[in-house]
Image 1 (cartoon, rainbow, N blue to C red):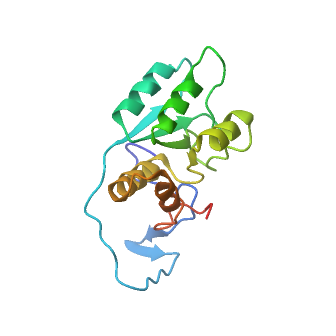
Image 2 (image 1 turned 60 degrees about the horizontal axis):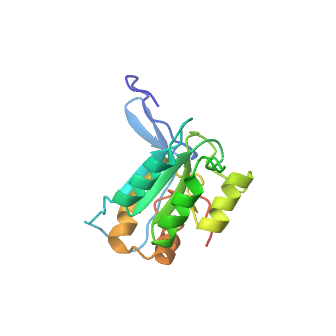
Length: 176
């Protein structure tokens, strides 16, 4: 949350896990894990982030898709991309979706996550083009998770299933 403050980190969309008090870690959660951990040593870095800004150009998004297997669109508000004949975003998205690219919608807003069903521009993207939605995951969590998933599979249906699986409390909402 801060670049110079000692209280630099904050728990986004998640309750505090612990605090440091009098030099001791005071945990608020008593986590018990069963079974042995599974370690993964491969990540696929073919994940790009496209930030929607006023005046964003669909030709740039088209280039992103040519370089990456998955593109995370960081949108305004609850999640959506400007629609309209002069913008060209939807035709670019349709082209790459048909080629099997993974599409994910994130929000630029720090707290409360996304909800693509609130407005028509988000709802149509999710329904028509199969955008995955980050919900309460941070952008960083989404990118890391996609890099892990793409090292396992690039099949859109399997990517979706794994994406919505809760891993280390990264997503509280799930579509499973």
